[in-house]
Image (cartoon, rainbow, N blue to C red; front, side, top):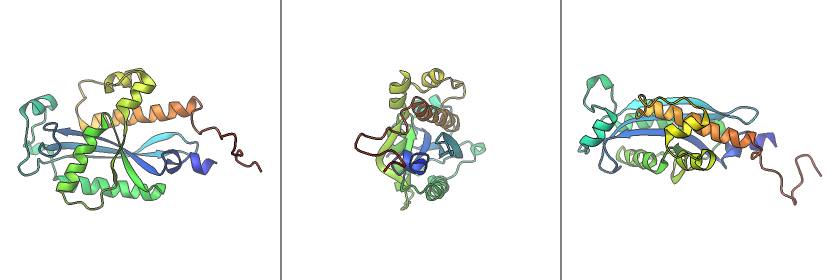
Length: 219
């Protein structure tokens, strides 16, 4: 019983959840630049509580021909061409992130990674588009499935905005630090762990055995 429910594989049906946040130069993943990405892997302790594990963070160079929306840059405050950013190519950033994810998947015996993000289709779309542009064949992420913390927060906390959901969960959130991929990924990771662990604490996990299944150890 412990092996099946107190592991990432058992808890998430073989999926390896990775919290992602991106900062971009627009809303179109096919045409607008990816400028910053952070990814936080997760682990589960011996009692089945979800915890943060390893974080990866990169500033990213705009790909050749990328669109840079002025309004988006003003919103994030990112200067894509500031040499102090230490930006790397999409390929370099994702290669390193995917390498770390595949290592975690192997250690957790999970078959596929899954994006966890706030309004997840946005972040998922940019990651998938960047991976395709970079020609990365070994993309560990599921091609369309995600865990969306905006939806989960609406259910669990009655809030869908990241800052308000964190506030409801008792997680400190500094709006001055928001819209940094690193900061937002850290807060989203705390939020996702809070929701999953709260569900467990309330008795929702592990699932109660059905009437036609014997409890662990029963004959």
